[in-house]
Image 1 (cartoon, one colour):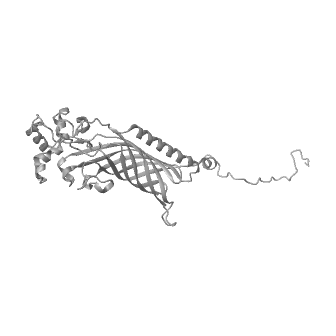
Image 2 (cartoon, rainbow, N blue to C red):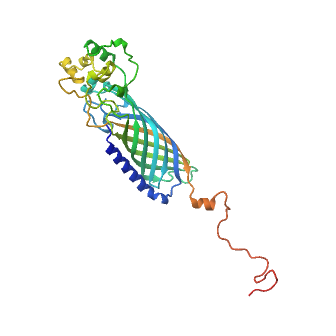
Image 3 (cartoon, helix red, strand yellow):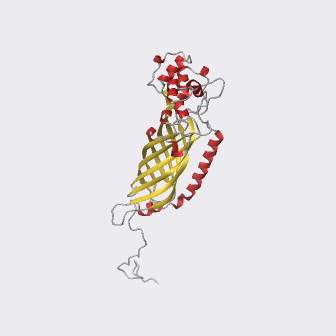
Length: 356
């Protein structure tokens, strides 16, 4: 769940940083102020599903390359000064993962999976730590500038995790008397909204805050086009990107579809794991009246990351001094010139009298 005080604190800190950075905008010496474009790339997730043989590890250590999905966004970037840029964007990050991609026995036995689309709006600050106006030799007609920068910001996103029913889980629960609906009555190709079925008995919010951080490299071509590569990792304020966080919901509060979505394990899967007592072990992966069976790890929130390539059009900037003195409506010769002498000698006036 999102803490209101944390959100307000993050917004205040971001506003103060952006305001402080804009104080130096009067001394901008860059050749442009704005560029607009779009980005496309990958989307990955880190949370309670998937992972390797150990419990969750941060950053890239538990990522599954085969679960990589896509991400796209459009953006506008404003250059505050020669070091700082502010970028606003809106886009979609698609993420997905499954316990059957893990080699952790407890996660495999849980047998959960999900997919999700994050509709994200963000404001990010780029801090340039290396810059070259032109990396090509002077004899080239084209100029290619390059820069490396760090990225930090804040974003708001909405999301809706989904999953499909497991036929084996439905058959197991039906045979065990846990559900009354016959397994042949379910649609196993449909993606169900997990939030609406309250698989953990929690009505979590569809929206949340994230803190994106990362690095990027940008290349400007003739000061007209800009090509960038950015790697972003976003830490969120929610643990429900995958709909898994705490414990299993009480089956009495769920319908039959919700029961199968909440606990998709089944005895056939447990038998394949080679445990000594499958009937006892499977109780760890469903609701129990006698003990608390964990469904996820609530101590760490979920995270997601992107690796994107972007292209943008540079909107060139002309200073007020340049507009006044070199604008298209002004004469080219605006400098100080010596007044030409006429053909008449000095001291001569229209009446033909001398002036002293």
